Length: 104
Image (cartoon, rainbow, N blue to C red):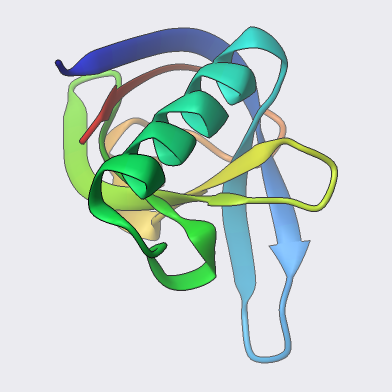
């Protein structure tokens, strides 16, 4: 069963050691759904993916891409948003975006 999640979120920035990353933080009920999906996959297939990530098909506006979401220590999940997506959708940090995730 493929699970889909849709929500609105602000594009944020995170300063890494070598670059600035644009991220969307997934919280609340959407984060709980991703956590449950990850736990069920872990039980079904054993083992976890790198960093506890979950594969997704992400979509912001008309731009879709295959990627992963990563768990935070606070129970939220992070979706990295690349420069190509930001440019294609004319978005910058601080903008709100309509996000759709298909959990794979």
